[in-house]
Length: 478
Image (tube, rainbow, N blue to C red):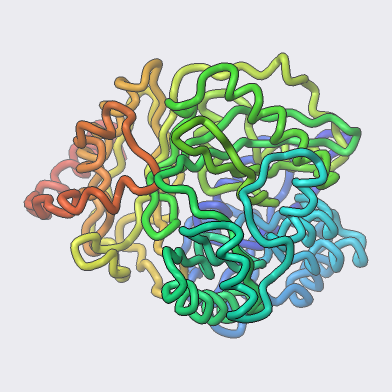
């Protein structure tokens, strides 16, 4: 298939794993050639096999994915006209789109200025306040020392969040409920922020007890058209890391949803946003909501929005970057049914979610109506120890909340991954929890449920998995 006249001819994917595979699929459906980069550890990865061209980068397992000059030079050399950063790695680096622009290559994402503005959480708060988007009580600037932090905390009122000015993902974030905890949290958050993001600046925000984490998906083209595609509930978290995402949220009524959606668009306009992005909010027990941050990239959990709206977000990213209009308005967006994503990670929940890497000795994924697998592993694949532990995203959709929960439970029950520990049994226990089934959860759900780790270990013999695989092969004539 040939690309449309106003579409890119070749896209380089500056990422790895399942998101690289996801982008390759979108490009293929648009008739666009793909180029992948990989480290030596990723040489046998699915995305390397699926791309039209693949190039090893280095040195080491990490550095090659972070070297913007080497990546852009490669893109220039092989005739690429656009680069997709995926999520993680360079996706939040404002220098990356600048270098792409300098070399005449389109960056599939927002502008460098927008990434920079929203990446600085203190600056983002100022912009949202000016735009009239609700923000949490907090400091106007980064706090310079202990005395200033203590004085500001008295004004705001405990409990307090100490947050890194840059980055995200829960790193550089600590909760303090009194002066002593604040002093300790300041030091810890600064060190963690410096290690993760290269800067040690932190600021203070009021901590909301048992909030819901709600994010709105934004699409904005280069012609001034902005829409939101509804919300995602991301409250099932551990240490501020999302485990399960749901759409639509069970706590929003039509009025609250409309107000939050309007403010999400207002936030995008304030940031001069283009492409796909996410505006994140905290919602308290009284229905008050506050701007948390804006993610200037595709999100891990984007698939559930695709399942309920029928809109391919990665394709839209590429089309918007190529200068195309959205082609629909807010009134055209229709959300149907429910969708849920479980992040399956190579971790051992029983031992504090310790990473579990190594060879996958058996693999069997679930299927059926309303089931989607976005993954990066297969039988005999060796999960490397250098990257994030996410290995598969299991996405299901259903016409009702109950059907969606039951379908996810059935799929987790079917899913077979052997050779490494995974979070599958832990996630299955969540599906069985009566409070979760009733929709009674918030960001403190996991902490209040220590019994979720009380699950039976896998007891299926390996030969059963082999028998299942053999039966499937026989059925399809492999």
